[in-house]
Structures are given as structure tokens and as C-alpha cells.
Amino acid sequence: MRLNPWFTFLIALVVVGGLLAGAWLFLRPSGPALTSAEFSLSAITPNADGEADVTRITYSLNRPATVSIYFVNNAGERFYFRRERARESGEHTVEFSGIVGAYRLPGDTFEGELLNRVLQDGAYQWVIEAHDEAGAAGNKSGSLSIAQADTALPELLNFTASPPVFSPNQDGINDRILINVYLTKAVSEGGLRVSLIDPNGVELDIPEQTGAIKRGEAGLHAFDYDGGIDLGQEPPPDGAYTVRAEVEDRLGQKLVVTSALTIANGGLPRAEIYKGEVEWSAKTLLAGETLYFTLTVENYSDAPIRTSGPGPGYVYPSMDANYNFAGERVQSGAWRVGLMCENCLNDYPWRWALGAPDSLLAIEENGATYYYLAPGQRATLTGGVVLDQIIENRNPQYFWVGLIHEDVEIASINNRVDPQLTKVERP
Figure 1 (cartoon, rainbow, N blue to C red):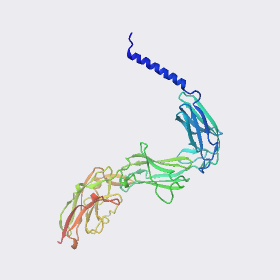
Figure 2 (figure 1 turned 180 degrees about the vertical axis):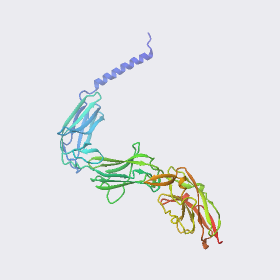
Figure 3 (figure 1 turned 60 degrees about the horizontal axis):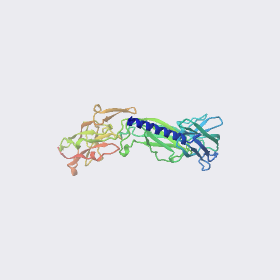
């Protein structure tokens, strides 16, 4: 009788599998997975003085296993250095500087979350424990003495991140977060780190401000973050974030404090005078008449753009009257259309808001209401100045407009837009 080829293949597969399993059982080392373990020093003084700070732990496995290394004090409390770590067969070496997982002591009052801590002075039993894949356990143990340990924690006090709602859009309001934290113990230069953590857990370092105190010194440390706006970068997206300060001392003791932060209305602001076009009311006027302009501003960014008055349609009654006369002084971060001439005594003395309040987006910040040209919005506005002076040695002279981001910049595309040669004649 002829056998089905697939049936023959299955029989062969079963036979080969059985042979391999038998070989594995025959060749597998017997006995506990952990065959040896030792510490190079039976006493250490973890204080970062360079003497007996570290002991070397060496252990051997004759097959893969899950390994834990811990210490037991006289009260029977366990302190884990490594907990259930998968390890391959062979010899393993790791250095131990007295640092174990977090634990608390009676009377502890530190702020934040403790991640690692040095063992307190005293006598301990060390234990190395291994479980193989079959669940069989084995362990080795010995004695370790801790003395002169630097047990002072590097505490982080009075951690603040303000404002709690951060709007990186260069509008002059809540554009930066300022972070302060007091460090109780000197650490290495990079031992104190502050970061912004997004909803997906991605961390972004926040730079420390330079000042009288050096990095890592005990004392008050300040950090400043603008979302990258000042470098022309898009800030992180709007959402809920965490500000995290982490400190690690020279031993490896580690502590973390956090604060909640919300990013709202963020974005790199971009706007322009639409098509670079300005409609002028006249090229020649009599002294005392008004020169008007009409133009459209477009916000082509993802950020709202704050603006400030006077509103569209406002007419400056004299060439000597400027935005201060209108009661609208320079506001850092505000965008305004400005009118300039060759003989103006200061830059863009006549300025206008990008729209009337009822045409703009109202946003409340810090208990006040501000008005914004919304992302993607266009606004058409007009304004005027009474030309009550004739400059004999410069008549006609050029008038032009600009789009001003006050105390930030006038972008090249928004400066000296559509200049017109204008003449003023005597009545």
C-alpha cells in the first residue's frame, strides 16, 4: 500500500521533534540554574569619596533564568537591586554602589517621588536568586556591611511651573513658562534635569537659565521655555503636558517632582498684507486733507494673532499725532498695521488694529479679554492721517504701510509695502 506523502511528512516531523526534545533533556545541565555568586567586597562605604564605594557582583548561570538581587536587613526587610531580570546562561558581572529601589523611612517628608536610594548603614544579607523557565529556584547568599553612607537625599523643594496655561504664540501673554526649584544637595553638573512630557510620553529638555548659581549646585535653579518660538520653530501642539524635574546625586539616589501644564492657542504666527496691495485715496492732496488707505491682512498661520487699537477707520488728526496720541501705546506681541513716510520722526507713527472687536476672536487670559485675528482669517481695514504739513524739501514724498509685530519684528515681506509718492499742495 502506498502512503500519502503528507502523512509520511507528518510522521517524520513528529519523530524529529521527539529526538530533539530527548536530546535537549539529555544535554541540559542538571541542578539549579545559579551555580555560583560572590561579592568582591564584603563591606563598602558609599559616599563617593573614591574608596570602597563599589563592590563587584559576579554570578554564573548554567542555563537562562530570571534573576533577582536583593538585600535583607536585621528586621527582615528586603531592598531590591535587581528584580526578576531575564539573563542568558554564562557569567554575569555588575557593580553595586549601595543604591537600591525606593523605600521610605519613618519621618520622611520629602516632596515628589523617590526612585532610588542608598542603603542605610548596617549589616545586610545579600541574596542572588534565579528561577529557570521550568520554575525551579535556586539562590546564593552572603554578608555585606554598609558604613559611612551619604544618605542625604537630593531633595527638590518649592517646584513651580508658571503660568499653568502656556500659549506659545508670541502674543506677549503667557508666551513662556518659568520653572523654579530649590535643590538641597549639590549634584553633578548634569544631575538636575527638567523636561516637558507630551501626552505620548515623549520628553523634551528645558534649558536652565544661566545665573549666579552654577548647574548642579545646591540652591534655587530657574528654567525658561518658550516652545521654540524664538528660534522660529513650531511649538508643541495644544494639549495637556507634564513638567518633570529629576535629580540624581553622585551616588545614584534619584528623585522626581512633576507639575501639570496646558498648552493652548499655540503656534508660530505668520501674517501678511494680502498680495502686498494697498489702495490709496489720492496721490495729490491739499494741506489739511486726509490721506486714506485700504488693505487686507491675512493670518496664514495656525496661531491666533493678537491685535490692538485704534480700530479700523480711525483718522489721526495731524501728522504730529501718533499712536500714543490715540491712547494705544506699543504692546509687546500685538500686531498692527502701520503707516510710514519718508519724513516721519519715528517708525510707523500711525497704527491701527487688524479689525473691530466684533470681527475678531475674543480670548480671555489672566482675567482680561484680548482680541485676535483667527487662523486663516482675513480682515480688510482702512485708516487715515490728516496731512496738515508741507515739507518743502521733500514734496512729494513716499508713504507706505507695514505689518508690525510689536517688540518682535517687522518681517521683510511686511515692511515698506506698496509705497506711493504723494504730494501735498497749498490750498
